[in-house]
Image 1 (cartoon, rainbow, N blue to C red):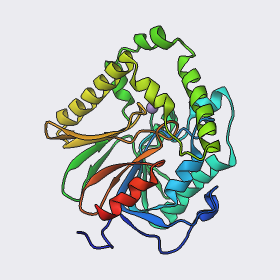
Image 2 (image 1 turned 120 degrees about the vertical axis):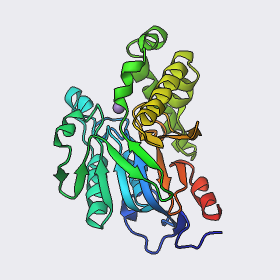
Image 3 (image 1 turned 60 degrees about the horizontal axis):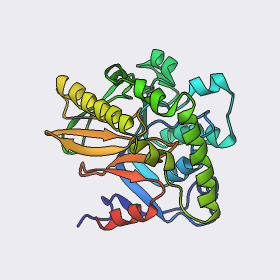
Length: 282
Ligand SMILES: [Mn+2]
């Protein structure tokens, strides 16, 4: 049993930021974490689930927030300019949290690669770092990196062979419509694209290679584990004494990694609020 001050999920003292929510339901839970990691938000890309992220961000209380890359999708913005109000509000929310005293560390990815030039500098109250070292409450040293460097190990030729050049876009299109359909039925968002992707043999092999190489990189450099993103495939596990943690994304999975004040890490899915509530008794 943990005290309520240390519990990961505590009752929300004030209903703050609820104006961000589509739902008129009052905010009733606050995730009280030491650290939160999110990645692959892809602001500026039409399939970014900014409204779910705003909902999540208005339910967290943390000392440190890591933005583990591909936060702004500069590639997508270049192809087609898309910057809805919600995307702007996400940016605003990061600054708002930083202004409230949350340490916000932005580790850029490949889709926001130009921001890497500003490593070691500040964007207002937000720290920019190419990579970062994080020490958990129980003393584990973790390497925080986006993970696109691991692409060098992955052979992607299977992807075009299996689904073609526009296949991935098609998956996202299907996912977008299934999401709307589920909303109409009053069901929470779930990742159809993720489900399809995980059933493709080549995709599974690529994910396995990425995970193996990310763990190997952490080991080579003397870390106890790694926190990364990039492949839009959330995970949290220990392998041979090393921790592998992947934030997932806010296009398909809508997931975040959180560490409580005792050093216990968890993977949270936005869609599954029941899961957040279960943590209260954990
Ligand atoms: Mn990436």
